[in-house]
Structures are given as structure tokens and as C-alpha cells.
Length: 421
Image 1 (cartoon, rainbow, N blue to C red):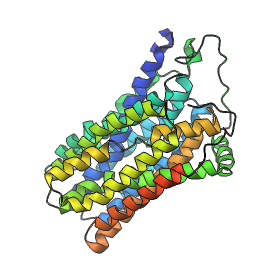
Image 2 (image 1 turned 180 degrees about the horizontal axis):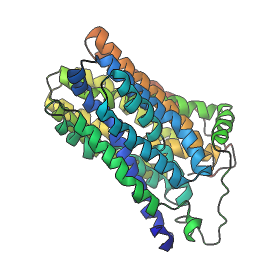
Image 3 (image 1 turned 30 degrees about the vertical axis):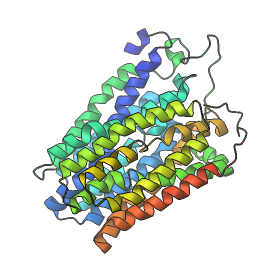
């Protein structure tokens, strides 16, 4: 492998780059259903609730697979887990080119791609940061989290352009090829750990003994969940992150383009709005990582969820005028996934470096449960009421509730002898 020739702590940034690109492609896959919704509705005649169901299943499995993927990274290996996830993503999206029934869409873009993308998810970022960095972990987690925004920034307008004439197959082809192209890159450039190339974590003093990874695979994921469920901090992280998913990719990521379409805004323009959010989130989430290294993560979560809730409550009142939408995109975009670095920092602090990625995987499952509820629920509300307004008002109220839940927990001592991230 090419990485066997590498030495020195700076190779951590090569690993960061490969991981960033992999997360970027995974983000493109998870955001694609938002631009596929209208073309699939027109091409196959499927109703919006059915299409939303497939998106909801994919979102849910993306989260549920996370803790098991984190356990597999500890036992099967980081590189093998990544390659397996990318292979499932590529196979499922390319296979969808031959779908003719709605259950084919549920199987490919819901079940298989959801499980595969769960291995190329924020739990991967948490594992990489803990395994390769002893310093600047908040900033590095912010950068990897921002890859989700960058995926939307780079790909959503392009995918919307590909569907401009009602075609949906070019999107499936582009995402599938992108995932497949990453497999040899991961195989060549992704070592299992710093020790595998004769170095230590970035910022770690020479001679420091490497931390031991607990074994157990799937069993480790379950036992860690049982341990975590006994602590109030786990439920705070799980509940607030459920609201995070409900208010981001489940609602806005899945339905904003369709919501804009209901108000006379073309899909390419609406995708550009999401792209602008991605640009601001790239700034906001990176800044959140920097802030997490310096300030109480609970207080940061209070600010992030509070501002997000207020912005969602304000959106229906903006009447979809250009100036108001631009203001919403900037304000909301800064906060899109800024919650991830402080959430990971709290997991590290309370559960330790080895178990924190798995705990975060279960917390991410809560995120995806919320996202799945919003993806399906908003589509159902739209079908029943003819408008998305109620869905956005409910999401804004939950954002405010999460803000107060995050700050209500007193700062506790680490549960497993962990140090602050």
C-alpha cells in the first residue's frame, strides 16, 4: 500500500483528506432523494408519501448502522469497513437504474444504501479523529462534519441540473460512480492506525503507549449501548440529536426543494438555496469545532438549537421572497450541523475515547430516527393539509425544546475516566 511508505504524524492529514472526500460522497447520496422527489413523482406516478418513505428508511438505517460500523472498525478494521460501505452505496444506487416499482426504490435507496452509507457517516469521523489526533480534535471533527455541508454545496445544484428535464437516472449514475471510484483510494491510502505506519497520533508526545481498542464487534455496540443507557447524559445527547435530525436532513434536506416548488420556485433555484446553506455551514461547523476546543459544549448546544428553532419558526412568515430566503439560508446554514463537534466532545468526556465513537453512533441513531420521522411526517402533512407550514412550525418548537434540554444538565465527571476532547 502507498501508505506503508509514509511516516510521521502529518500523515494524519492524508487520512483526514480521504475521510473528508468519503463523507462528502456519502452526503451526496443522502441528499440526492431531495432532488429525485419531483422527477420520480412525475416519471413513475408515485405519491410523495411513498417516495418520502424510502428516504425515511434510508435516513433511519444510515443512523442505525452507525454504532455497528463503529464496532466493526474496532474489530474487522477501519479500511475494510469503509470499503464495504462504499461498495454497498455504489451497488445500490447503480442497481436502481433498473427499478420499475416503488418497492425497488425502497430497497435500493432506502434499505441497501442506508446501511452502506451508515459506515461512511459521522461515526467514521469520530473514529478517525480519536484514532489519529491527540490535539485539535474539536477542530478536526468540525472539518469532517463540514464535509456533509460541502457535499450539498458541490453536488446538489449539479444533481438538480441533471434532473432539469425530469430525468432521474443521471443522478443515480453519478452517485454510484463516485462511491465506486473511492474504493481503490481508500484501499491504497487508509492505514488502520498511526502505529501501522510507525508513528503516533498528531500532537501526541513520542513514546506514548497507544490506547487499546475494546474487542467485540456487534457485541461491543450492544454492551456499550446498555452501559450508556444507564446515564442521564446519554439520553440528553440522544434526545437533542434526535431533534437535530428532525430539523435538518429529515425536514429541510428532504423537503425544502419541494416546499419551494409549492411556492413557485424552480428546483435548480431551490437546490441553490440548499447549496448556499452548505457554504455557510462549512464556515459555521468549522468554527463550531474551534469553539468546542475552548468553551463548554453544553452552552454551545443551547445556542445552536435555539437559533435553529427560531429560524425554522420564521421561515413560513417570509413568504418565500428572495431577500428573506437568502437571510434564512445564511442564518440557518451557519447552524446546519454545528451541533456535531460539541456532541462528540461530550461523548468523549463522559464515555472515553474508545467507546465514544460507538456511543456517538447510537446518538446518531437518534438523529436519524428524528430525521426519518420528519422525512415521512412532513410528506404526510403535505399530503393531508396541502402545505408544509405545520411541519416547519413543529420542527422549530422542538428546536427550542432541545436548546433548554442541552443546558439543563449539569457538567458531570467523566463516566469512564475520559479526558475532555
